[in-house]
Image 1 (cartoon, rainbow, N blue to C red):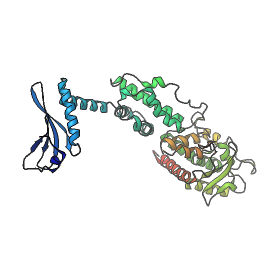
Image 2: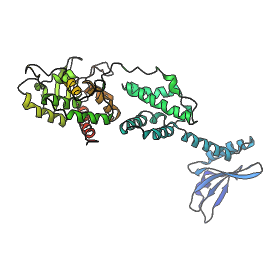
Image 3: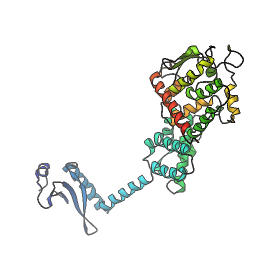
Image 4: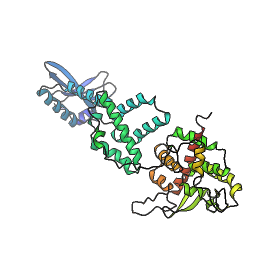
Length: 396
């Protein structure tokens, strides 16, 4: 007599395992502890075999019968369902071993020892943040060029063009490693050349590797020339404004009480606010007794009515033997933008707003000066603290 759901539900365990039979080899086994398992008894090539079909009530009687019929159909077609299940499980395990994330981490482990700590941390962070969430569990041999492009374009669409190109480059390295180790046949990044927006040429020289940034900051702190130039060198990385905006800063625009610097940006014809971290405030307070007789924070050497020379910071860096192809006055902006995005993980919209770029919102309106101000204040303090951390590393 076929089983019913009521009969299974009301069946009580006994001291020994017992079975309640349905039809066509299906039965349910009841353990002394109360567990109930659907099982299928079948014969294949003259041998009696058994297969688990799931636990009741997670698997209903109806579902168990459906599975029974599927497996009996396999037997009728000369296929052992037990062996097929093992093969599928083995294939799945193989796929997991050959997933993009597994192979990428293997590639990373082999190369990490020859990279600097800052370089390796940026690479794995880039993969973990921008690639693994979407492609990490995919078998690497099955990933197509359009599929990879769609993921990398997510980075491009948030405005991080250089990061998108670096991510594509890292993916290419992983795919080539997979080809070399026999787990993929080709590198799909070869088909994606020119698919991303080009990186703008003519960028100002900038240091963007954290370890190198720390070394640069220690050099800047050691400047022995004019205290006015020394203050500008220390403040430049903290505020990352355009060099012309820094050297023409006015005392009237510095709000010590609210820790803000408010001024008009000629390039974008808009007002701008720079939240000042406590490190920046300390630099300005130390400088104030020296230049407060002038309207300019960084007063010129020849006249109190003129700001510091536009070449003063560059000349100071060259005297400290910082090469022009390594760092420029504008380079502090690229430094901040890259690390705030790639290392400190701040949203691009907030970074762009703080850079006073002429960006617009989704409705085409230019950002106003107070946009994201609370978040920007937190970001600027976090940035200053991070620079202190970098400066303190490997000292001595």
